[in-house]
Length: 234
Image (tube, rainbow, N blue to C red):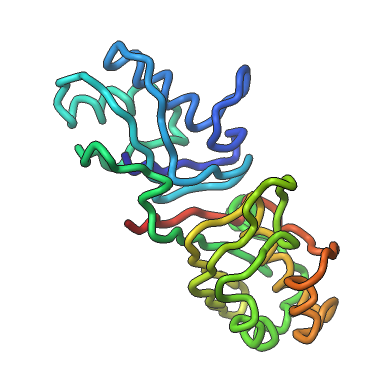
C-alpha cells in the first residue's frame, strides 16, 4: 500500500492503544474489510504531526477480495486526513522497511506567516543565510554516526548513510530535501534544525565535525508540521 496522510491529528504512524495513529486506523479498517486481524508493516515511523505523501506499508492476507474493492473499502472507513493511494500484490519476501533502498523527506520553511503555510511549514521571522546552509551539505552527507542529531536509546545503531541534501529557496520559502538509507527518530528534524542554526550564525561549519565525533548536545529539532515523507525507493 502507498498511503498519504495529513499528520496534524495523528499521534504518529506507530500503533498506540487509546490514541489515533495511522497504523492503528488502517489496521482497524482492514479488519472490517477483509475480516482478518492485520499486522501492517510501515517503511518508517513518522512522529506525531508529521505528514506523508508516499508512505509504504505491507501486510499478509488470505483474502481474495479484488484490490480495487480493498482500496475503496479501506478508504471508506478512515478519516479524510488519510488516503490509500495505491495497492498492489508484491512478492512474499517484500518488506516495506527492510526492502527499502532509501527514503526521501521534504522539510518546508516559510518567512511568510500565511495561515496555510503555518500549518505545513516552520515559520522563521528572518531568512537564514542559505549560502552557509548549502556550504554545510557535503559535511552532513555520507555514512556517519547521527546520534547527536536524533533521539535514540543506548542500544540503537545510530550510523546512517545520508545520500543527498539540497536547499531550494525563493524570497519567502525554503525547502530542504534529504535522502538517506535510514533515519533515526527525529533525525531529519535534527538536521534541519542544525542547518537553520548554521544559517542564523549559532554554529559555524567548523563546528560540524564535533557533532559527529563527540557526545555533544545543542541541536534544536525543527517542529513536526513542516516535515513530509515524500517517497520510499525500492
